[in-house]
Image 1 (cartoon, rainbow, N blue to C red):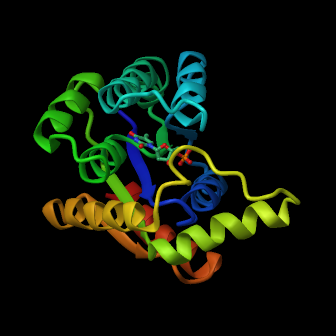
Image 2: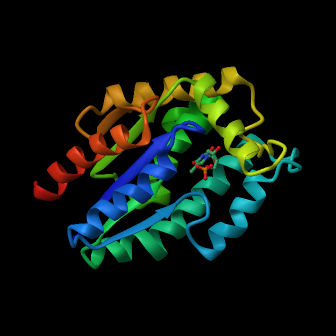
Length: 213
Ligand code: TMP
């Protein structure tokens, strides 16, 4: 049976860069791994992602949003994560159930207990072996998102979540930190305000410990 490692954090925390570097680290050591993420890790999920992140989809209700993230996860676990783990691979996943608790629970104010039960149903009770939380202030994270867009020559384009107020992202960050306090054995909280190489170094120490365990 493989391992399941998730990467979490607010917008601009650098988790997507770090997941790629983590995959390179594992591959260089001959550890078979798969990089995936939510929403959108399957063809069905790709369609759901369009609906979920479309900034014109103003009419999406809170309950609809929650159920679509859960639907995306159910398909993803079934089609991608469980088969890869069954084949003995290390699955590195950009966001998972903790994101739903942080965003739809803490962020949107929906019932956290219900969300946890829904996520358990959608994921067939799959819990990550290790979860990296890339922690950064909402201010610094959102500045990175804007800089990235400008460097790409775009007027900063915002999806439905990126255009939320700064305060929304601060609440999400606090929600993630609360989750990490509840499950200190699973979470590794990484100070993501530092440079890419230093953050990667920390990630590697924890990954090494996990694969040697
Ligand atoms: P991404 O930018 O990391 O691909 O994530 C897309 C957005 O979806 C991001 O703003 C976080 C949000 N999201 C939720 O609100 N709930 C979830 O369960 C997941 C997986 C993502």
